[in-house]
Image (cartoon, rainbow, N blue to C red; front, side, top):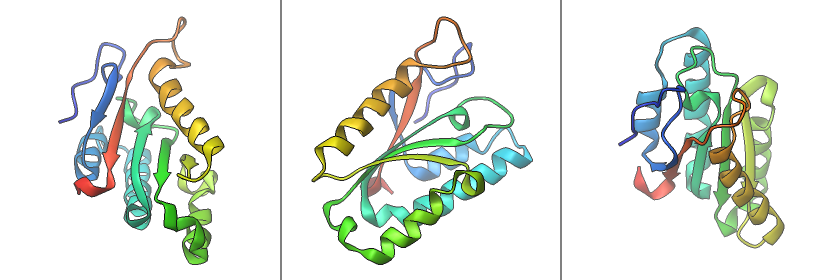
Length: 149
């Protein structure tokens, strides 16, 4: 279950595990044209990427109470076999167009220590920083495991 927002409009600190359906249900509100668009793009991306990942973390203004979130920040951890599949790589690239999909994606491959370190660093960073507050406030993020849906 995804907890209620704190007084800053964020999730309380910590990693909150949920299914993608719970994420969509919770963060499709408050209803706005922008939030609805971000939700549709997140659902399309997840439907495509789910068979190829172990887990993903979701953050950004999408996981707040903002009426018009800028984008959806995602850190995803691929399964080993995906890098060898050229068709998956080509389809994945289209989602990297931030202007079109409004997804900010950081990704890691199990055989690549550098990408793993960057991804883990972003998961940690997402929980500690909100640029809208000085000093920054800690906040929660969402974890979706691909085997939980």
